[in-house]
Image 1 (tube, protein in one colour):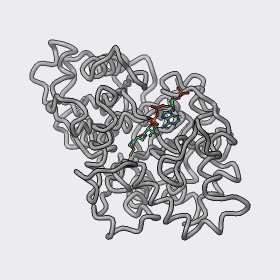
Image 2 (image 1 turned 135 degrees about the vertical axis):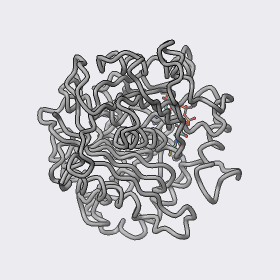
Image 3 (image 1 turned 90 degrees about the vertical axis):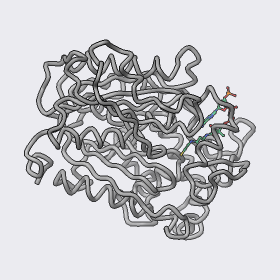
Image 4 (image 1 turned 90 degrees about the horizontal axis):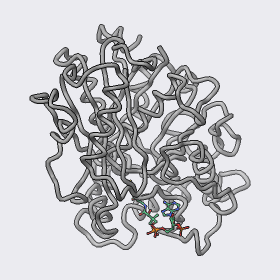
Length: 400
Ligand code: COA
């Protein structure tokens, strides 16, 4: 079984573009969108007149005053006049929401070539505005004051996890394990030219509370958090090769699952709907997690990556620490996770993240990932999440 068996056609990523991530003071949301849209269309070998539909993933929620952004990509070219364009919003998974809507348009036959963009400009607003906007993705905390913001919500997840499983982690504390995940991703980020943070902090720094690594919301230290970021990424989806300079990449399976919004209806240590999205995507691709050569996952906080090892089926529940302690998820391990540096080091411009993950995976699978390139990269997965395990998307991608 494959996506083609199920739907009768291939979905190919035929071109892609990626901006630098970080505090981009010289850019606007519009300039970032236009930059990556132009790169993706050019790299696909197409002309803007060949684009049948546009999806833009952006969360916003008050971080930018412009609240109606679907048409911004049309600024790229007069040849994009009258192209239908829609903005998707699903919190930090807005980019993957755009990607999967684009996939569905191609599968439905209403579009041949779809331009998918993810973009966010977070650093123009003050920290209080950004914090309030992000908390809008919490059923309980939306509109409420908080000194710890979204970090506080994942800190609660970490506390529940530590209480239930902490004692069974061999030889180390939960804080040590989270510090190792942070150090791994910061180390990987050194090879990513698009990454916001090029700082190889090392395990000791990430495991230790210090003036430079303070507690943000216990047990999460600064190095356990993704940063606040600007950035954008784009891909072109098509049913067949479009003559671009880079080999296209095939979508082998995709899955999307939303969980109940109120925290009381979820087990905070499980990410049940995240697991469901993994099962759907892997099931459609007809592979197990052992069939993947790498994964780019949503490490908005290090505890999320730890639980992801379990949600993707790499380890049983409560044993995710094994994946990092036994070296499986390092660049030379059996399943390298977040070779790009992940959200942790690459940055997390929320609406851009899902599309960025697809672009990084496409680079790996087309052999164009530069210093990030893995020696074997035939099949990989990307996983993107909005809220605390609420909106969940997974894609399985293959080299053609
Ligand atoms: N990880 C590591 N270092 C970080 C960092 C991060 N996430 N964020 C900032 N830094 C570094 C800066 O580079 C700077 O280093 P320097 O002093 O050597 O120049 C220093 O920490 C202070 O930067 P500043 O921006 O003042 O940090 P801050 O304390 O205001 O913010 C966080 C740090 C972690 C609170 C902030 O990045 C944050 O809120 N992250 C979470 C964002 C979020 O919730 N996203 C949605 C997820 S679902």
